[in-house]
Image (tube, protein in one colour):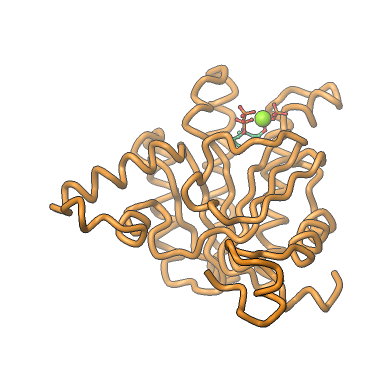
Length: 246
Ligand code: IPE
Ligand code: IPE
Ligand code: MG
């Protein structure tokens, strides 16, 4: 990657890992083979983000709507998840990657829930990169649970602010994604981080997720570096050095 980009790297990258099924279909393979290849792509991208010094990486792995898929496919995805937790935790610990799950963890099957909790505990003191796995995640449900949490805490209407609501989201205390990537050519959010992506730069690529490698990531980062983030200001204001901050 071009060295000049290093100053313009996103602090938080969120990725909608889409296209595993089509990748498999193109090869005459079952969808589960696509998910396996997708998990391998995820491993490589996690390492690459860590190497580049990205602070937070959020991967959309299973949406609350994905329960609508065939039972066999869901079971295969959850087997891959168990495998991921078991195989990747030692490496994450070594590389200083802290695992965090965003989504309704309690809605996952017990073995997956237990393995993920253990992995989160094991890596809880890692501070080189935060890896958020979005599992059983839906942005609307996330906002609703945040509102419930606020109300249960006795918050009065006049106390509700972007800060207080934001703190009750699964991503409380984390920076918003600077860059949102979606693989596979679809150009929609599919109920992903609707609140947090208010000002994220969006990058859509036709590349199917299992083919998304370090070179594809570099392309996304180059596109990001060339964007002008205005946060409501005019281009002239930014040129006069009034800063990019909100
Ligand atoms: C993304 O790939 C993985 C999950 C949603 C779990 P898909 O399985 O959605 O792949 P396509 O969109 O059918 O190609
Ligand atoms: C979004 O992909 C969810 C994940 C990548 C985990 P989908 O393939 O489920 O999204 P839709 O159904 O095409 O919108
Ligand atoms: Mg899909």
